[in-house]
Amino acid sequence: MSNASDFFSGGGGGSIPIGGVLPINYSGNLYITTQEQEWLKTGKVLTNIEDYPDAARTILTGTDLGSLANITEGTDFDGMLCDFGFIYCLDNNTDTMFKYTLEGSYTGISWPVTSGNNKAIASNGTYIYVLNTAHVLTVYQPDGTVQEASRSLIIPQGFQELNAINWDGSHWWVTSYVATGGSTQSEVYRYTSSFVFDTVSFVLSTADMSKAIEFEGNNILVQREDADWYKFDKTTGALVGKALDVTAAPSSVAGFIKDSIAYHITDAVTQQIRLTAYKLSSVGLELAKTDSDTGLPIFIRIK
Image 1 (cartoon, rainbow, N blue to C red):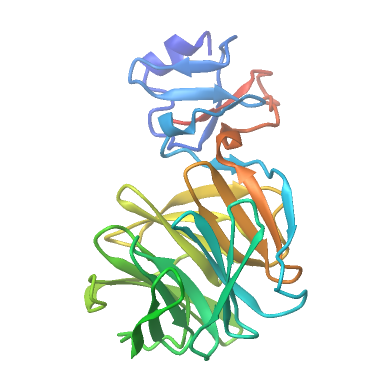
Image 2 (spheres, rainbow, N blue to C red):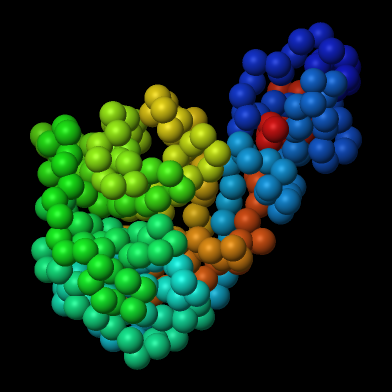
């Protein structure tokens, strides 16, 4: 190819999706086509991730906040929530909720939660919701007072274990997990604000235990046990692509939460909580690559 403009004006690269790579004869770092596609040279990253909502992101791990006080190493720790200006952590071994500052310091506040293999925690900005694997939901005020005693959540497809719950501002979303015949499968369900099943459900095509749910526009983001995130269409369940790569992740993820400035990751085995600066997240590939046939630099499409 003679140069980048000639290649793209001839229709080249038009069918390559976001995240695809291509050798381009261009000396700069960011090439923008006349169709407003944006291609970033490998070996370069951009941190203005809000400008590239559909590009996969890499989260650069920041400071380790250390072991969580009162949650002893080796206990069955599952679920965390960042809301009301604090981090709430759920100890499944003792059926206890612990409250921490955003810096990871224990506040001295805890309360017992309804027993029964509690696995998921979320809030709607007013109350805290705790869900166990047996589909039992309990609602608490932020100070631990029980707002609503246990109720059963109806799961239409009969999957046996629930692992994650979150509120997108209009609906509740829940993920389930089942291991059958040596393989694993996760399914997503949508509910109304009063937890009535709302007809939407789909099987996740990335087979693994789902650990957390987030949202981005018309997509739902589901975190796997290996800490990486995948993006799915909210309506059809179609896999949109990998959403986040989490570097230096714990060996077994117990929780993952996001506030306005940071991501927090917890390790199910050591109870380590890691604070990752949100502004250090990036799009692009850090490792520079060159096409072996042409010698041209390889670019990745980010928009």
